[in-house]
Length: 539
Image (cartoon, rainbow, N blue to C red; front, side):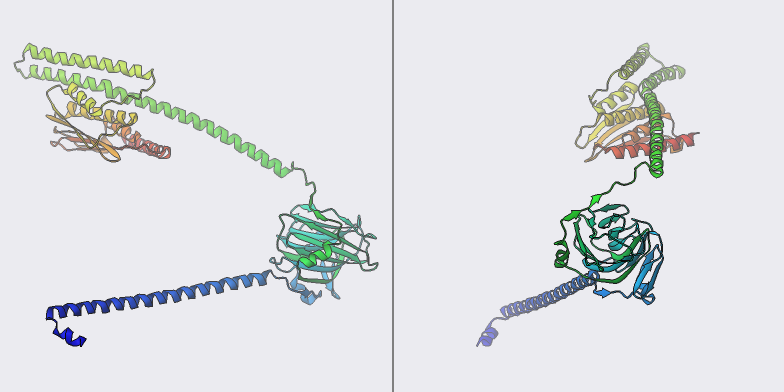
């Protein structure tokens, strides 16, 4: 019924229906593809998560196995000697007993893993003479030859005062309060030493195997060594060890010994050697010598900076004088040259015109005098923050130098932005120098001054239609060199384009925003290097 109704529809609607059905099929295909993609991503995510969990579990199991202390009774014979590492001493194995037949101070015999942490360490000890100190080491690291040249713990017996001692060595020695052993400590007697280390807690007991008398000690350290090897250690006399064994331990093992101790001791810092050693004295002398050399170097460096500052200031004054009085003298010369040209060429010159030109020259002389007085006054006063109208000042300079004989066009593009006094003064100096050079050397008819403001920069262009010249950076004269230096001082770039018969363009571009001190220092260093290179080429 539905099919007949569908065939009864016009062909146009039938095509629309088929198109919609095709879109539905394509949409359904996309949905199926998205579902399959989602399922595949989900499966991949689950596989990656399972792999990560398996890897983490494997790493945790490996760390647990690595840190777990095995239960082991050591066989003390020559066949198992390779299980031990000797640092100092003269160690021998015989009849399941290990001997140190030396009087070495701090002889060590080490075994086990640096990852062992919570453990129970047992050993029987026998002294071969008096005035001796021998015992066991736990959680030891960085072992070297010497008495206290390791980082770890030592639990031992002393024959001199008949005590049991526990302490920490970190290439220095600190110990808890010693515990007196009932009956004392004697040679040729076996003593059973048991040590339990759990966390930052260590407890130990010693038993005279002949009399059965026992003593206990317990101590705690806040910042402890958490893992390390085990070993045997003797001091001053030879001795013997037997029944050496190790096993994992827990808190209950620690409490089984600590509950018999009178108290839980803390490490007491024993006084170390005096600080005034030859090494420290040499180090102090070297430090004083280094400070003296640094002070002297700083002094000479400051003097050099002062001399450089004075030299730069003198150079700046030379450029200021050149940019003020020299410009006025150029205008005077231009006016006098015009009068001379008229007289030499035999032109009919009216006395009124000569008087006007002489008046202009007089005004320029007066202006030169005023600028010289202003420069001298400026040297004796503080710098003001008043900012001149840059375009107006340059236009007035062009009118005063060239009068009405050269047409001056002034243009300003963009939104004028406030310029710093340093940047404004630099652009004014460069613009005046470019105007003086154009009027004095290029003989232009039109002088164009353009000031263009961009978002982050300002550009000054002084352009003339005069005769131009061949310009090369190596052949720069004093005026051009001064413009280059002023541009570098404000972090700007100076570009001079000129060809014979096509006039001259002087363009300077500088950033508006204040630069960081570090960048300004780098710019100044780069400018000094460029100036030195120019001086080298000039020579």
